[in-house]
Image 1 (spheres, rainbow, N blue to C red):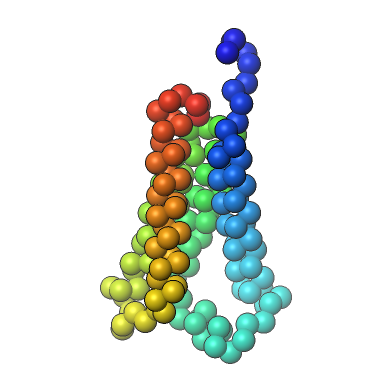
Image 2 (cartoon, rainbow, N blue to C red):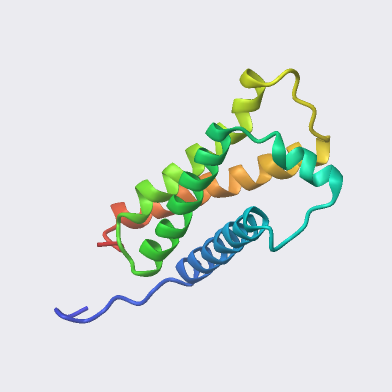
Length: 140
């Protein structure tokens, strides 16, 4: 490539940045609508929602912000995407592990645990992929 020309955005960058931006922004929107009272939760869901601690809300917000910022950075082909996605991953893992140490018991259905594990493994792969893009000089 000659100087001054833009490098083509890899297909996986389009997919990863789009997927994580949309899903994380949608989750933040839903949480905002619930907190504002615009969306009423069923009684069982409201009971679970009210059990979430301030630390868990902080980790959720920080992780979501890192996810959205990482998605935008990746789309813009910036190497800042790597630490942002790594933070997104680590904060998500902390949210999964934290209740084991802070709550009496931790009962989650096996399908939920399996789904969460798969999602975290995929996100870890995304972090490795982004790190490779940084190492190869694709992200600036």
